[in-house]
Length: 158
Image (cartoon, rainbow, N blue to C red; front, side):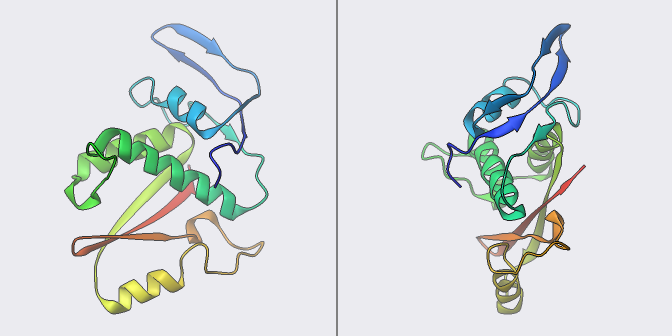
């Protein structure tokens, strides 16, 4: 997904008694990311995003890029590389709290890496399945192998 993709965002929040009211504003992913990570994670739906995207796949790719940016910011090394296997439960909770603030849950399902699980995850990856009107966001998956663990990432609206 291009980082220039505009997302329609409309949010109101009160942080430290500062009332920031935003009316429908077109923002790209970096602007949204910078706004959301300016503070510690806010309450769920503090930044309710309204997407002007053409498909469920585009929404999934936006969320995947957003969670990748979060992981790099908080857990990336000097080369912006992240090894999910080095993250602990509290790290995943922090990432999910930021995702909650934009109205989504991010699920990291850690599975052992064996050929059956890897092949199944690959064959059911979000860009390999047919997306229909009945497909839910939570049906879309993306797997990342780190050491001996396969992390299967999925999202759902909260």
